[in-house]
Length: 124
Ligand SMILES: [Zn+2]
Image (cartoon, rainbow, N blue to C red; front, top):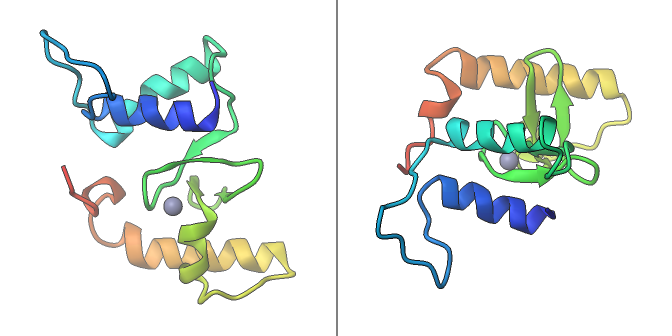
C-alpha cells in the first residue's frame, strides 16, 4: 500500500466512508490511536504497509518518515515537518542534538504539562 492508500484506510477506520461505498452494517469509527494500531499491525505483522509510515503526534496525520518529519527519542514521539517547524520558530538547525532537545523541550512544556496529547485536538 502506498502513502495515499494508507491515509485512506486511516480515514476509513476513523469513520469516513470511502467514495462509492455504502455499508448496511455500519462502519468502524475509531479514535486516531485505535485506527493507527490497526495500521501498525498491518505494518509490523502482515507487512502490507511500509513500516516507515508514521503518525504525527501533533496533527495525527500519517506521513512518510523517509521524506518527512522526525522521531524524537527524548519524548518518544514522531512529528511531521509541518508541525515541527512552528515549534522551533521556523529555524533551521545544523546541530541535530540541539534540534531534538529544543523540540523535546517544546513538547514537554506545551503538550505533556496539560492533558494527554490525544485530547488536545478533539474534532471527533
Ligand atoms: Zn504533523
